[in-house]
Length: 151
Image 1 (cartoon, rainbow, N blue to C red):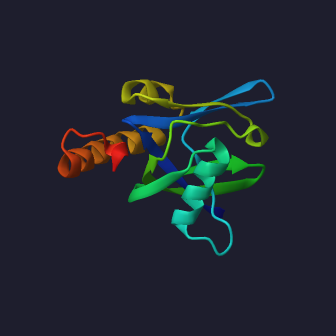
Image 2: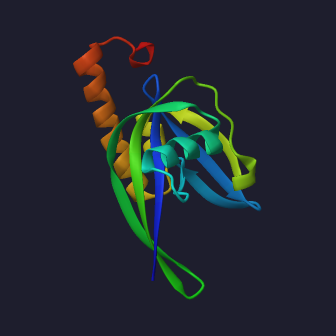
């Protein structure tokens, strides 16, 4: 059994969340949120910010840690137990571009109900819903109905 750790971002811009579409060699892989493996000597926060930038070309800032997801999968004869640490983030702009080297072919910001149905994995849908609640709570608490991005 192999333990693996990744970090990612639930990235917002003006109330919409960032998603990526993966299509490897013509095979549908699905819509996901940006995440990736922690590199040696890297903090979880730096990993999450780096992966968001690499996979989507979006510069973001971390607002807060929102939780982790865990799942297992098989690669050849090994079982991989993966933990993904997620951060609520605010994008600095709407501009984004998918990382072709990782087989991402589309990227964009989506409303909550759109993102919920697009996301391939149940655990990512659950962490995204939690992030929307946190995002809206923070927005209302500190900024009232003012646009979160302006601050």
